[in-house]
Image 1 (cartoon, one colour):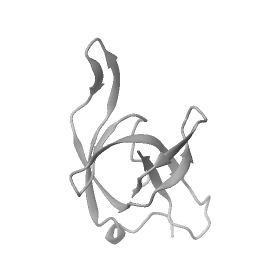
Image 2 (spheres, one colour; image 1 turned 45 degrees about the vertical axis):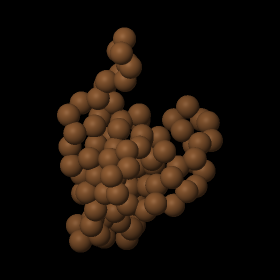
Image 3 (cartoon, rainbow, N blue to C red; image 1 turned 60 degrees about the horizontal axis):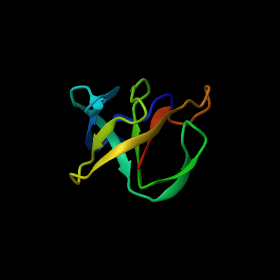
Length: 105
């Protein structure tokens, strides 16, 4: 198996990519709908800065999906959250589903 199967990507999230800070606060790009599988499990994860933070949910998407840290995400439930980190999960040829894991606050 080289990619996460499309039939597992049952949910849709809207990702507004983080563009940086302005004098009025964070700036985001236009929202894009991303097919994924959402798992709303609370767990401790490490942020890109090395701090331990709490992730309230995780979205699993197709390989190649680009989601910058601090992007704003709207989940299927309507809840809006922020990206902690997006991690490429590549099995390196092993029979595992390659995907991107998006850790959400």
